[in-house]
Amino acid sequence: MKTKSDRANYIRPLFIFSALIFPVVTAQANPIELPEKSITPEVSMVIGGAILLEVICVWWMLRRTRLPRFFVLWLAGMHLITYPAFLGVLWLLQEMRPALAVAIGEGLVVGVEGIFIYLVCRFVVSAKPGITAPSLAKCWVASLIGNICSAAAFPVLLTMFKIIERSGSG
View 1: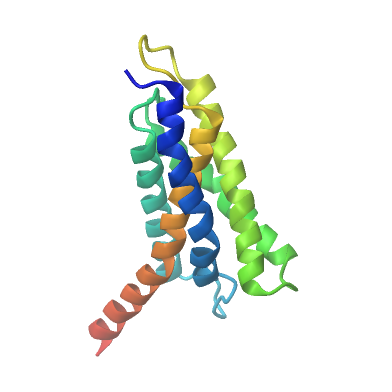
View 2 (view 1 turned 90 degrees about the vertical axis):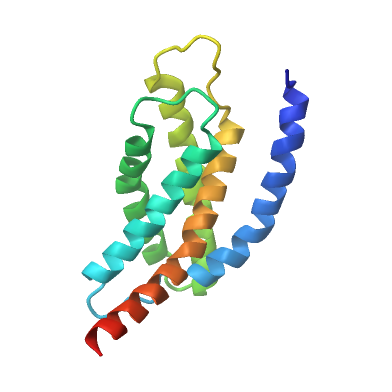
């Protein structure tokens, strides 16, 4: 049986690695540059794909803990609040360098999403004997890693969509 210190030894390097790579990935995500029509079907599809990847990553990170029924839907629904809030933060920070504004916005999103995930797992779940709910720290780590995956996937998905669009029209 794993002790609490064994789990901390597993989470600590993952958290440090995530914290180190987070600024690098968010600097590449830069969603501030929006076209004339800010939300086109193409951009909506790319954003949806990035959010889906984040949801899957968070679910995978927390799969061994007590999760509510329809957890993936809870996570996807959470983005109805956090993504517009993220865009609002970017708008408020538009005078800053884009990479810094995105890093601040993503950092706030990671914190808020980690708290949302913790609250959902803690208070929405009915008790299951023998399985513990995730800690707040584990929820923040899952949120951080999920957001890194999402931010890293955004430019890749956008490029793939542009390639598919060009090949279809040409």
